Image (tube, rainbow, N blue to C red; front, side):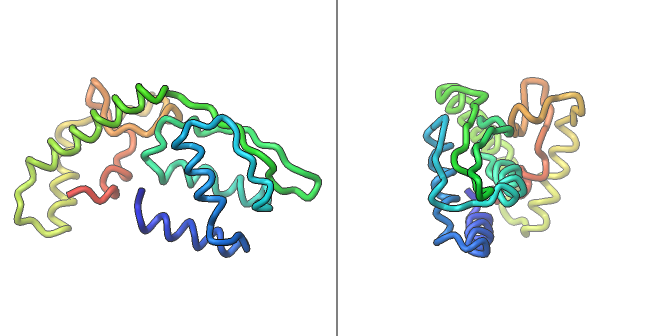
Length: 167
């Protein structure tokens, strides 16, 4: 998880008047544990804020690639989210296998990078490597998860790969 995004999300939740971003921690913890349902009624999160923030939350947490980007929720009469229902695209075993593959592939690509590059040169190296070795497939269902590569060397989330902070 990106420390910058974590701080940004906490700040966003504090702006909503939620104590210390606890709802963010609760949702993230639930997703990492494969919980199917989470009760967040105590956080008094307005539906409008949840709808605006959840897609961004999932998109910015590439480690949650196994979570279906759609979810269902229940609201109370005050318009606050009571609970959220999640679906998962991959089992924990599949998630571990995909994560291991992505990590080893990223490490392999980074190992090809000369060691004496500036940050800008590192980004350019990654950009050039990706442009030469991968293709972008507009037909792929990106809602199925955020992958960097698949067996055909298709890249699905190039900007996130560059922004992950590797290298």
